[in-house]
Every structure is written in C-alpha cells, then in structure tokens.
Amino acid sequence: MTAFVLVSGAYTGGWVWRDVAARLQESGAEVHPVTLTGMGDRRHLAGPGTDLETHVQDLVQLIDHVEAPDVVIVGHCYGIHPVLGAADRRPERISRIVYLNAGMPQDGDPAHKLVTDQTLRDRLLNPDDGQSADGQGQAAGGDDWLLPSPALDEWQRWGGVADVPADALERLTSLAAPQPRATLTQPLRLSEAVTGLPTTGVLCTANGASIALVESLVELGDPRLRALVDPQVTFFELDAGHWPMLSCPDELAAVLLRAAAGEGHRLTAGEGRAPARPFPVDVPELPRERVGRVDLYLPDADEPRPAVVFVHGGPLPAGVEPTPRDWPTFVGYGRYAAALGAVGVTLDHRLHDLAGYGSAAEDVAAAIELVRADPRVDGERIALWFFSGGGLLSADWLAEPPAWLRCVAASYPILAPLPGWGVVGPRFRPAVAVRSAGRLPIVLTRAGLEQPALAATVEEFVTAAEDCKAAVEVIDAPRAHHGFETIDPPEHVRDAVEHAMRSVLGNLRG
Image 1 (cartoon, rainbow, N blue to C red):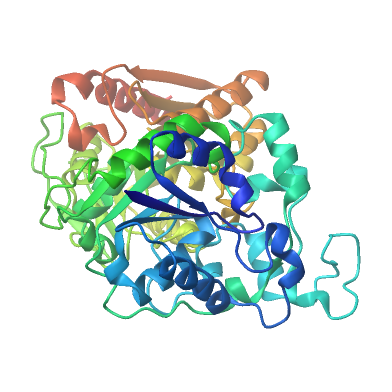
Image 2 (spheres, rainbow, N blue to C red):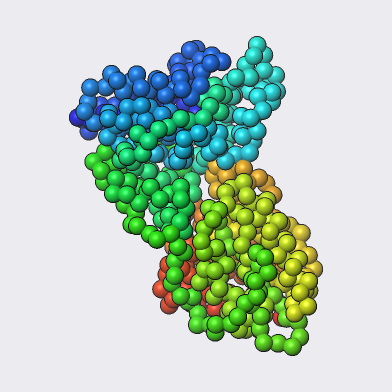
C-alpha cells in the first residue's frame, strides 16, 4: 500500500486536490490531501507565530500517523518547502518526494526566494503595503503578518492559469485563505538526510518548464542541478499550467502513480560543457579580437563595415564554462558574418536569473557602444540578433529604434515573459514594444518543433506585429527545435540560418 501525502501551494488547502485524490483512491492508494495550519478550513488557527516550521511540524505529525509502508509526499509550489522540511525529519518514512511545478530550495532558502513576480516579492518583503488580509484596504489590528489571498485576476502572478476551467478558478479564489507571511520568509532548514531520497519532478510545459530545458541546464554545468543526474531521479511532463490538479486531474493522478512506481525520464550524465555540434554552415576559421566581455570577428576590408551583434539567451548560471561567446554556435555566427563582409560581434552578459534582465540589458548597450566606437565599424549600420531568452532584451531597441539600428533579428526567441515571470517587469515585452518599431526591419526565425509555451510568445509577437503592420520577415525551420544549431542535424536548419543571415545583411546594406 502506498500513501500519497499531497501538499499544495500558497493560499490553498487539501480541497484543491479533490479530483486527484479521488482518482488515486480509485487505484487503491491511501491519500492524505493536507490542509496546513492557517489554511483552508484551518485558517482560524493561524496567528502571528505561524511560520514555515509550523507547516513542517504539521507534516511530520501526519507522517508519524500514516501506517502505509511507502509514503510518497508531493509538494506543489510553496508546498515543496514544508515537504522537504518534513522529509528531512523523517527520511526513513519517505519512499519518494515529488516536486510538482516547484523549485529546488536548498538549506537556508526562504520560499519568497523562488517567487518570480515582483509585485508579490514587494508585498512579501514590505508588510506595510496598505492591504488588509482580504485586500480591501489598510491592515487593521496587526494583520500585516498575513499576505492577502489573490483576487480572481491575480492568480497568473503565481503561474499560468489559462488552462484552468472558469468555475475551478472561481472556486480557487473563493476558498483561498490569506497566507501567514512567516511561512514564506522563514528560511528552510535541511540536513543531509533528505539528499539521498528518490525524487520525481513533474514539469508543467504550459508554465515554461520542460525536460529539454532541464537537460540543457544540466549540460551547461549548473552546479545546482548536478544531483538530478541520478538513477533515483525521474521526470514527467504535463501539458498544463501552474495548477494541474485543477486543469488535468486525471493526467496528474496517472503521473503520480507512475512516479510512485519509480517510472519516468532519467537524465544522462553530462560533462558540464556546452554542446559541441559543429555550426550548421561551413565557415572559415577567422580570427577574433577580445575586448572585455566582447569578441569581434573582422572581415578583410579597408573601410568601416556594418556590424551584427549576436546576443545569447538565458538565464544561464553564473560561472558556466565555456561562456556563450565560446560556444560553437556563437563562434560560428561571428565568423559567418565576417566571412560575408560584416563585423561579427559576440558578447557575454549577466542574465543569470530572471531578475538579471536589467543587468544584461546594460551589458548589451555597453557592447554596442564599444562596437560603434571602433573605427573599423560603420557605426551607422548595426544589426542586433537575439537568441532564446535573450529575445526579451530586444524590447528596448524595438520600443525606441535609434537611427543607426538597421535590423533586429531573433532566432527561436522568447518574446513575452512566460507565466510567473513577473519579476521580469513590463519593460521587457517585445510583443508590446513592436508596436513602436515603425518600419524597422525584423527578421524572425521560428523553430517548427518549438516548446509550446515558448511558441505562444512568438505567436503573440507575430500577431501584434501584423496588427501594427511592422516590417517582420518570418523564416520557418519546420524540423528544428529550440537551440537548433546545437541539437539538430545541419541539413534540418542550414537553409533557415543562411536565409536569416542573407536577410540581416541585406537590411544592413540596403
């Protein structure tokens, strides 16, 4: 007999698992949908002293009273924090920990560290925000220890809700309880006891997560993810947003049963380096000059030449070696531009987490200033080419295109913040900024096998561009995946890469 202990995210209680619990019980499992102290129908038990440790003890006491030999404990969103705390206290009772659309908190991490929405962060860290527990005005009677529960239109700040039925979203809103602030600000305390337990990650693709993304981060050598390359660690994907227990309970229940049986995708051991597939276009091995964060690939020319600045994606963990400008993809693009008569420019920027877009934008602007000042560059003819998560950095240049910017290009880009990326802020929204781009030429290369959540941002951008009659050329690579230069056979992507480069250089020379 397997017992499932189900722990949901902030503001909610055991009621949110109703449909999932029913499916698990039908399979013969023992199920414990948990309502933590101060939540759901236990909200009256909350007080200023209700914190993360309170919720950890709730789960420890429950585990101590579960008789089933195998306990699978599931943590959704905030719920993973008390789940890990309790598993660390009772490791001998836990057969598997399931991370359901949840982060990977470490010892000392408070839950608010994983909150990606800036408004929520500000509300968490600044109790005197003028809100009462019900969101209706100034806090009274010392209620600043409570975080108001979201209104109907605020749930998307925590993650995607587009797939949640309207009645379920209304029920979520009506039954939500204010969250004791200290549950989100008190650091999680873990020993080594929890590190050896089997785990499963359930990734919700409509919320921007995927197995492919995790694999790429592991391959890049993110030290936080090394533990994921372990036979005891498995993964599943769900085509769902942040609340799969509400949007697809049958599918989630099936995944939890498979996770309990030890099934799922396992990552293979990587060596912590960027993929080494050769650039899909044969280009000569031209030399480069390195100036700080910037590399220049110079054509054989006597007069100043136009430049193409290639901006890598992210977020990427700090300390990745080699850095993006040394990856075959960006070395290839730099050489390719130079071989065709333009100055190819690559750079490293500081997009190490979602809060890093501002710093990355500063790095890109500084690189452009350096390049335009170089006497070998025609500073009045510059193209900017963005990749993947770097696509959001195009917004500044689309919103107010300078006269010297002759083209903006983007390959398999993210062109709107993904659900739950509120910390990125409104500045980095190319799908909005394109309405101010005028007749600036835009060359967009789409991967036909793109991840659905990322493809949706591209479609949002294309729709906005069509509405405002922006000068967008769309190049499709039907058999290509996200990051196609590094993972797809050259014959699947060569035509798209060559087409995009011809278009960009044509706009520079026009």
